[in-house]
Image 1 (cartoon, rainbow, N blue to C red):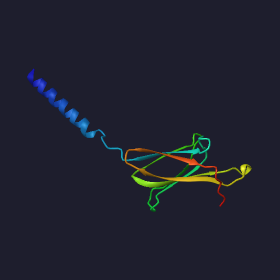
Image 2 (tube, helix red, strand yellow):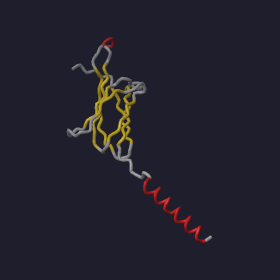
Image 3 (spheres, helix red, strand yellow):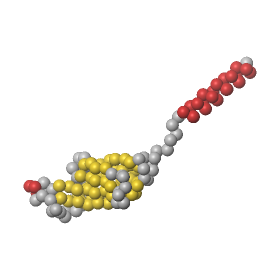
Image 4 (spheres, rainbow, N blue to C red):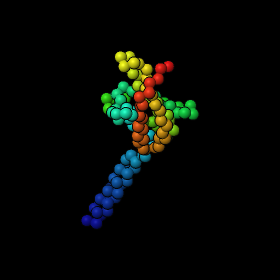
Length: 127
């Protein structure tokens, strides 16, 4: 009886050891970014705003996209960085054309989600 208990204990020990050894305990090193673009005057989300992400110092972290119906754009990066986010909204020609734009700088950290809110003013740019 005692021998069975020892064998069971040894089997249980090695089972737990193998489970702990082969399970994933890796730390999440990705950096997450949620960008929200809103109209400054109405605080309503702006759908279809172009998002351009870059590093001010010429680094390799870049991304481009467009906000969805809720004015939201989501992405992630493999490493921490200080980035600049530019939001541009093309004003329809029927409303006078041009574009509204703004930018913000943020710092991305490992395993964290950074929320960036960009408010577009009513100022129109013609380039």
